[in-house]
Image (cartoon, rainbow, N blue to C red; front, side, top):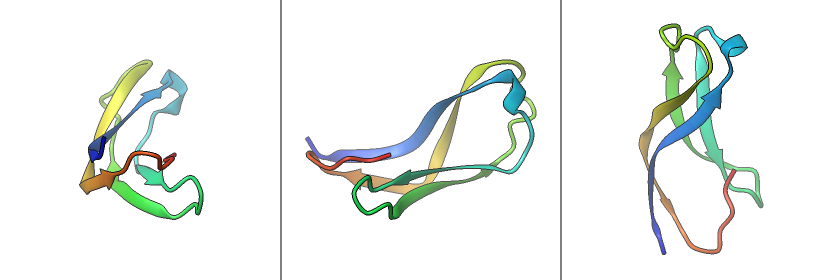
Length: 68
């Protein structure tokens, strides 16, 4: 089923603090960057935690396509 991705959620270890992180989604076959999240500051995220970052614009995804 086709749809849209609006955010990237990932696990951040306590040792990965700091600022200026970016997140992106790539086409698995070509390696092309399809979408990205604006740089974010996660200084307030103490300890290991899941971080959710909204994409700059929604990404349309299709069945049968691999993303990373």
